[in-house]
Image (tube, rainbow, N blue to C red; front, side, top):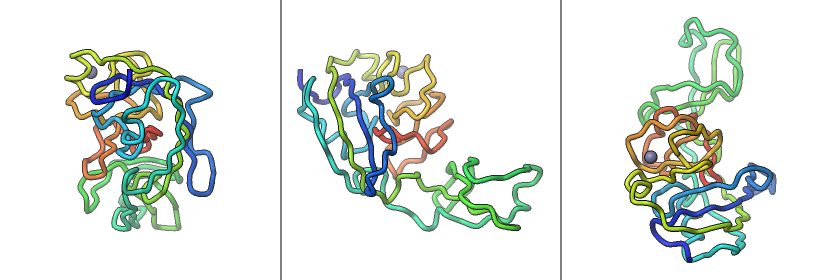
Length: 205
Ligand code: ZN
């Protein structure tokens, strides 16, 4: 069975950046399950997988535009420490929901100076060209319910209900609240509720 719209696909992937550094890999853990054609993953990777079948291996380089989008300088901002109120011990890596010029977005603290906290609402992989090594493990028809929900219902499925997927993919456009790792892969859409903004479905998020 080849990968087309509304197939449930299981893959292993290894994501490296332009410097050749490993960003994330599923090979040492659970494979990633996603619903093809439901924007579960970054557009470039989904396009590369179209037409592939179980057993296929591919190496694909994806420009930022087809991955996590361009880096927006306007999403990086200096916030006075006083704006954090009672929150103590602000350190790089902490995440907040903040008002930005693109609306409310999850932001991450990237730097703490004396009285200024630098926060960045860009996806950590925004503006980057990404390299994926992918192995297609299995392909099956998705169920009607999965198609309706825009994601796979299975252990390890992107955005499945019962599981929290840390660092999982997602972004299937539905109205569920999916705990953990569910972010939109579409840069124009806001990250989903509960998103930590860092879901890296190598697969996007
Ligand atoms: Zn669902």
